[in-house]
Each structure stands twice: as C-alpha cells, then as structure tokens.
Image 1 (cartoon, rainbow, N blue to C red):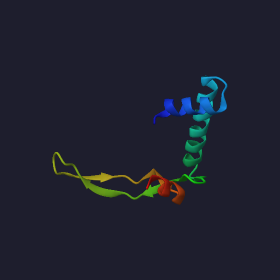
Image 2 (image 1 turned 90 degrees about the horizontal axis):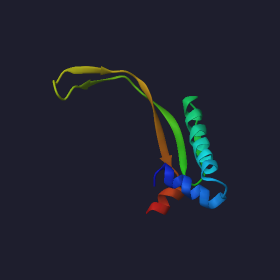
Image 3 (image 1 turned 120 degrees about the vertical axis):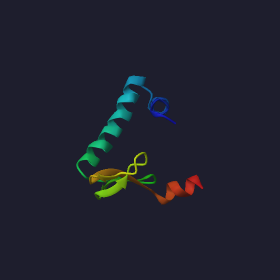
Image 4 (image 1 turned 30 degrees about the vertical axis):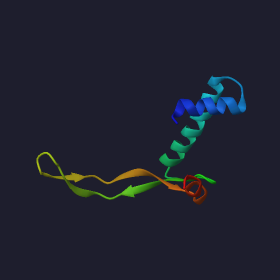
Length: 90
C-alpha cells in the first residue's frame, strides 16, 4: 500500500472529498515527522512506537577504494512494532 492507496481508504471511510482525505493523511504524517524532529516519540496503540535514535560516529571503509572514511554521528528514525501488530502479521 502506498500513500495514494491510503488516501483512497480514508476517503471511503470518512466520505467527503479526496482532497480532504489527502489533507487528513498528510496532517497525520506531518504530525509524526514534527514530533520526531523535536526528539519526541509517537505511540499508536496496536501499531507501534516511532522514535529517534542517536547513531554514534564511526569509521567505515569505502568499498571502491578500500580507504577508511569517518562517518559523522547522526539521528535516525526508529520503529518498534506493537505486540498486536506482530501477532496480526504472523
């Protein structure tokens, strides 16, 4: 399922126009991204938890040249699936 299919599903459930359904979907994603940018967590019951993880600086190797390259520390998004989601997928 992609974003457009999700918009279609929301449109079928709530009615209204597709533009309104797309605004709902975009608003939800924007809220998740904004919370993660601030370093917070988004917990959706039955689905899981979106959070931000710090990745430490490290040394890596360029596979083409074999040269050592320093990779800077960064923050990455993380998702932990809820038990209900894991059980549903099994």
